[in-house]
Amino acid sequence: MKLLRILPVVVGLSLVVFSLVSCLEPSDQGEKGSKQSLPQVEGIEAPDFELPDLEGKSFRLSQHRGKPVLLIFSTTWCAHCRSEVPHLREIAANYGPRGLEVVQIFIQESPQKVSSFARQYQLSYRVLLDERGEVADTYGVRGVPDMILLDRNGRLVCRRCPDLEASLNGLFAKQPD
Image 1 (tube, helix red, strand yellow):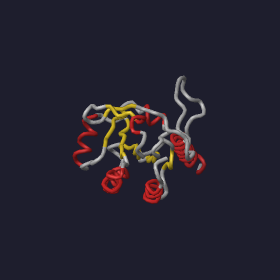
Image 2 (cartoon, one colour):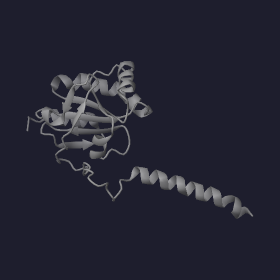
Image 3 (cartoon, one colour):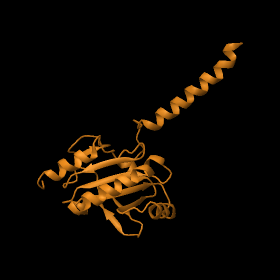
Image 4 (spheres, one colour):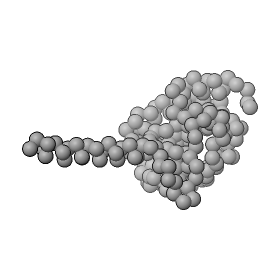
C-alpha cells in the first residue's frame, strides 16, 4: 500500500529531473540547418551576427574588430540578470573609455519590455534584441546571464569568466594583437 502512494511521487520527481536535465544539456540531434554553437575554447573565433538595438540601429559583431567586446545574454525576467546590472554599468564605465564594447543581448523579448527594462535599470551600454533567439542558439546559451568576453580580434577570451575583472585587466594589459 505504501508503494502505491510513493510510486506517483517517484515518477513525478523523475520526470521533473529529466525535464531539467534535458533543458540544460544541448541536444546531439541538431535541427536541420541549425548552426554550430560556440565551443568554450579559448582563442576560437566568435560567430558573426547582426541584431538591432533599441533605436533600430544595426549592430554587427564583425564591425567591432579592433575592440574587445563583452557579450551579455539575458532576459528581463531573470532576477540574477537584474542583480548584475550595477556591476555591468561599472564595467562599462571603467573599461568603455579604454575601448571595451559592452553589449547586452535580450533573448526572445519584445522591444517594449526591453526598452522599459533599459530605462528602469538605466543601462549605459548597448542593448540588442535577439527576438527569435537565433544568436543565443548560435552561441549555445543554455541559461542567463551568460557572459562571453572577446578579444580585439573577435576570439573567445573566456565564457562565464570566473574573475571578469582579472580577465579584463589581462586583456587591457596586452598590446593590441
